[in-house]
Amino acid sequence: MKENGYDYSVVRGFAFSAIFWLIVGLLVGLWLAAEMILPQLNLTPWLSFGRLRVVHTNGLAFGFALAGIFSCTYYILQRLTKVPLAFPRLARFHLWLFNIAIALAALSLFAGMNTSKEYAELEWPLDVGIVIMWVIFAINVFGTLIKRKEKQMYISLWYIIAMTVTIAVLYIVNNLEVPVNLFKSYSIYAGANDANVEWWYGHNAVGFVFTVPILAMFYYFLPKSTNLPIYSHRLSIIAFWSLVFGYLWTGAHHLMLTPLPEWIQTVAIAFSIFLIAPSWGSVVNGYYTMRGNWDQMRTNYLVKFFIFGITFYGLQTVQGPTQGLRTLTAFFHYTDYIPGHVHMGTMGWVTMIISASFYYMMPRITGKELYSIKLANLHFWLILVGQLLFTVTLWIAGIQQGAMWKATNPDGSLTYSFLEGVVALYPYWKIRLIGGLIYFVGIVVFTYNLIMTARGAGVKLAETRAQTA
Ligand code: HEM
Ligand code: HEM
Image 1: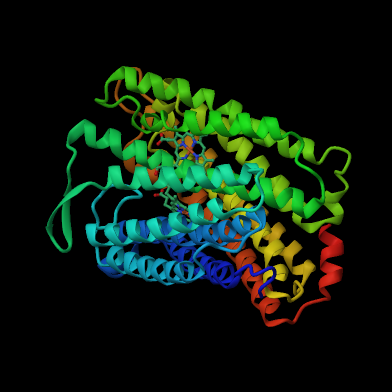
Image 2: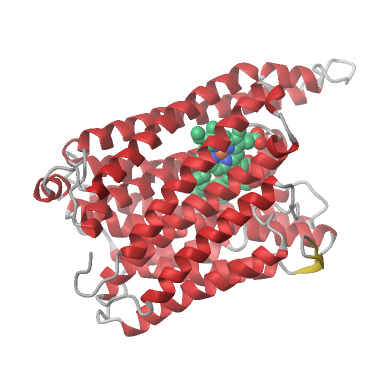
């Protein structure tokens, strides 16, 4: 649908790409969770845990989350600048290139091609394709911003700019490599330097994919869905600059108690603790936006997604800095406590905000009414229960695992063998699989609701708007 010349076809294209990669990534995640209980499911090398794990992480972080981010960015950009995209044809090319790159990425990872750097596993030809894709995206972002009719730069645009610039720098610096042939390359960095650059990138992939653009969505879609102005623009700007400044120093908290120079580790700890302030700046801004209007948690189905989403973000951003402290990292590193942390962020914060943003956009970009608010509520409760079952179980598992690894007898020998530690985790892994299945059913409901909406099978648009405004 075109309104004021706005181009929504690419918004829609990316939204459905996100849903597609979400389903693929989750099916792989469920298989992985099942392999932890039934190792015989490692049927072929293509289905081995090591290969599937990277298909899962890349499929969801870069297939699902990035497609969701591109979709919402193209929507927010046009609405906030009050001009259509500067280069709509380039945006459509971006959509094709993106899906081809993710499909080839999945295929190459299944086939076992892997640089062995986490979240940067893709071999160099794909890296080149991804950099070209990102430049195309950046040209549209800055081209549209330059043409803008609205002088005021709302906070979401600042978050979009930060993501666009920072991801380009991180990706290029960390992926500098020497090709050996078409399928193999070696990093130009070595030893501790390589690890340091890798986690500077790795942590900021979390920061500038799972945090910054998701905050852009939160700041745009929460006021839009509730008809309430954001509580404080000043707070949002202060939180923005301190978050962006702070994030870039924290990567080494993934490398505590390693040969990395100690001062680098200490800087990372200090900035990680510092990050609680800007993170909670946004959490508090969200809560205060709702002041006097908390009844919307009952009456407006979208608000639940936004408020629970930002609450999980708030919990993550206290858990993250504390688990980076030397004493706690010595206990928790390598345990299931960390995947517990990861999945509250991804299945709670990231998925809830992207889901609500899609629900808000879909009727407006297709001109078709939302198919079912009841199903949207069902989706919410299923992903909430599934996520909590998954993450809280892994926290408890992580505490038990850490305690078993550290337990010693009076003579100093270890109380438990490593294998005893593995066997003790089976009950937790079963619960994780059940939590994942419940969450997956929620995502199937979400997908069905969006497909039916796009097909025009929904209630009147006016009714939907009344319930979200
Ligand atoms: C103030 C904010 C945060 C801080 C300081 C922080 C800190 C940490 C630390 C210290 C670890 C490493 C634990 C270890 O390996 O021992 C970690 C892992 C991780 N965190 Fe956070 N976290 C924060 C917020 C988030 C958010 C919002 C997400 C969103 C999903 C997230 C996703 C991840 C992921 C994916 C990993 C796993 C990285 C890996 O593969 O090893 N974190 N975080
Ligand atoms: C049905 C839901 C899901 C299931 C069953 C699932 C399962 C898993 C499993 C079994 C692992 C490996 C953990 C390990 O090595 O010990 C994992 C890791 C990971 N998953 Fe998921 N996952 C799900 C949803 C998601 C979502 C929605 C995202 C992102 C949007 C995500 C991102 C990740 C990441 C980043 C890691 C790496 C964590 C780390 O290195 O610590 N997962 N997942």
